Length: 245
Ligand code: BV8
Ligand code: ZN
Image (cartoon, rainbow, N blue to C red; front, side, top):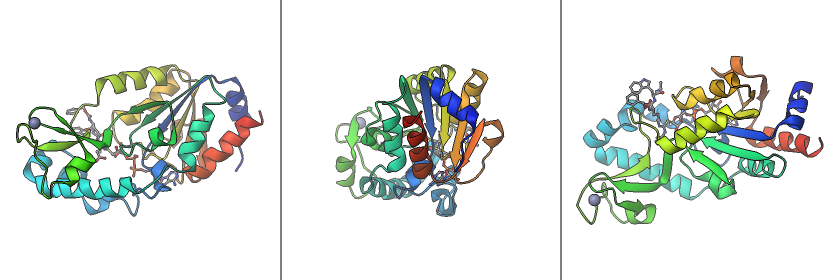
């Protein structure tokens, strides 16, 4: 893998780094992506499952799907890509992770600044009274879990299609993107908005955009550098590069 001299210069001069991640960075941990050949959506369509109306209409099916994903995520670990991003914190003034993933792997790897744009599958809450529930409590109930206080339906604390993103996480992510010297866009097909607008927002504000993916995407034409390869391998090479600057 070759890196441009511009990237080297940028890495030397950058202080504020943003890493914007999608399902591809968790693929090497064994989490199925959404749109790849093993993609979850292949079996189901977003409109069937990941939206509030579908949840109200097919509560048991939606919960079956989320319990299935919760079990996958309970048995996986962060991978070299997540740990490489943590290591970047040693070499830059700030490293902010903006993730579309709901698997909590960045935090579990040790990243200090993590903005979860689409929620976290380890959290759940009652739509009646807002009471929070852990996954352990959810698994105790065979069917779609109900609130012990108000008998309301419990839902996963994730952002569904048609739902707004959490305001604080979104505002903090926009600010981080606006002030980034360099933004790494890792393992995302960049098709879901408004999250997918962040890399071009960063670019317009002057950031150097580095895309890391196993194939080109919608975003590649806006990237200053496109590094084709697996996130874990490429990010390790980038950290090696930074170490020897
Ligand atoms: C919103 C959580 C304002 C749930 C997710 C009509 C009506 C309403 C809204 C819309 C509409 N039309 C468009 C919209 C906006 C909509 C949208 O963008 N739709 C798309 C499909 C067109 N967005 C929304 O609804 C958002 N909210 O707009 O609010 C609003 C409010 C009311 C009314 C209107 C607007 C909310 C979107 C959040 C959806 N929730 N997840 C759950 O997970 O169950 S989305 C889900 O897919 C992920 O969170 C992620 O964000 C998203 C994209 O997936 P990726 O992460 O990119 O993964 P993917 O599989 O696609 O790609 C993986 C990539 O990795 C590939 O490029 C692959 O090559 C690469 N890769 C694979 N392996 C590796 C690798 N790279 C490196 N290394 C490897 N080893
Ligand atoms: Zn309740």
